[in-house]
Amino acid sequence: MNTMTKRLPTFLLATLCLAPLGFAQAPAATPAGAPAAAAPATPTPKPITDADLANAPVPAADARAKGDPDGALTGSASDITVTDTKKGITIGDLANQVGQNKIAINFVWTLVTGFLVMFMQAGFAIVETGLCRAKNANHTMMMNFMVYGVGMLAYWLIGFTIQMGGVGAVANLGSTPVLSGEYTITLFGKPFGLFGMNGLFLMHRGTYDVAVMVLFLFQMVFMDTTTTIVTGSACERWKYAAFIISTFFLGAFTYPIFANWAWGGGWLANLGANFGLGKGYCDFAGSGVVHSVGGVTALAVSMILGPRIGKYTREGKSNAILAHDIVIVLTGCFILAFGWFGFNPGSTLGASGNGALRIGSIATNTMLAGMAGSFGAMLYMWLRYGKPDASMSGNGLLAGLVAITAPSGFVNPVASVIIGLIAGVLVCISVEFIDRILKVDDPVGAISVHGANGLWGVLSIGFFADGKSNYGGSWNGVTGSVTGIFYGDNGGQLVAQLLGIVTLLGFVFTLSFVFNLLVDWMVGQRVSAKSELQGLDLPEMGALGYPEFELKSEV
Amino acid sequence: MILIGILVTLLGFVISVLSLALNSVGARMVVVLLGLAVSLFGIIGVLNKAYLKNAIWKKGVRQG
Image (tube, rainbow over all chains, first blue to last red; front, side):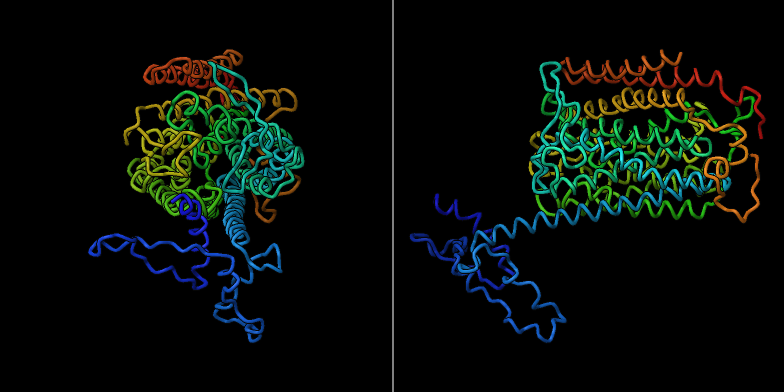
């Protein structure tokens, strides 16, 4: 029995891989002494040996001389790397090939989804540019263009180290043992991870490693999404030099610190293991880490900048400043929705392994929530103002996507629709609140779309996580699946989520605010009134976005 | 006022972290919600109010 137990995994592994080669399962043998009329016996596995592998049918050397139009001859046992050509293929070779195939699938999945997320930069760029006035098109587009490079540089220099330098082994990527340097303090008798220390320049302490590179690429494009949120709320009045400094700090410090706490093995992720709060702070793909960090930073910058000239009357009444190209706004929303299929399903960091096939439900949840968000916003605006507003419908789509980002890996389709629908209405109410009550000018609605709905997404896990999303038996080091109070949790998960929300509002906002205040004192955040009235394209960038158009120089 | 706003906002975060010293989920929930309220008050009630006091639209800059 012991021998069988030891051999079984090898047998299953080999059978799984060799099935396409035509190896037949051994016929079921009736155990000695078993009653003849018993139910069909479980087949006794016959271990596959090296000799079986040596006899594996492979296409003859000249079989592909005339090509392989149906693909039947391409890819066979002869493609498995062997360690000793004299011995031929062995069980060990086969097992290594299977392991590498699993990691290869995960590498390709993570990289391709990362490429999709990178393409979201184009969506953000045209959404924001379309929502601003034509006289600021070049400036807004350039901010969105350079945010990619500035953020990436900051993240490569230091940000990745802070975020992931102590994450430990990422199993789906074949483990990343070199990322093992987390700086911790002890608080309430428990370790509090604060920041990572390995990975500077992707060379430090052995981090010149293929798995680390994949992780860096994927995390980098997430960070860049955060930085581009701020350019939307601050557009049409943000001094370009201030934007560069602010973005660098966000990519180097603000984002990575919170991302470490949530994803890099920091204290928020360990609230479950250390303090019994559910599975710790859960944020599957970043409603909090990516979107709320961007949203609260956008709020801080917008407060410091103040509203655009003409946005409010002397009595404080809000004026609508119209978007100059609604066509590219909605096109950008589609690009973003497309990119979100990389954002959320890609956050499994693999398509093979424990729970990785949840990519199916994650992608569908993402799609459904986006749909519900656009419906929620469109219906709200239609009922309240008599017309189905286009830009708010677009923002509703994005709000639904933002809100489902954190729970996408933990909830079912019905919950996804509810979360998205609430997000679609919430974004409209939030835009009105920020515009009319707070009198903070946010030209594209970024604070509401990403900030408010990011927080809603984080919170929703505490309610809607259905306890069915088993990723290898545990999450954040706590056995079991993430479960909200609607599915029987005692409220511990909700407390963990709320702690994440307060950290975003109380810590991340403060850090962003203080740093941007320093930038304001040092170089000034806001352009001159003259430049603003003229439009920022000429004063800040030296060229108009649309040189053949005659543009109004004032509001 | 800005400095006070910053401190109040940060205080909300500190209060919430202190909830981890408690044992009951209910008590932690109450303290975390208190921290959340304090942080929101810091942002909306203090910091934003300080900026609105000197808002550009109150200064008579040419409006549209």
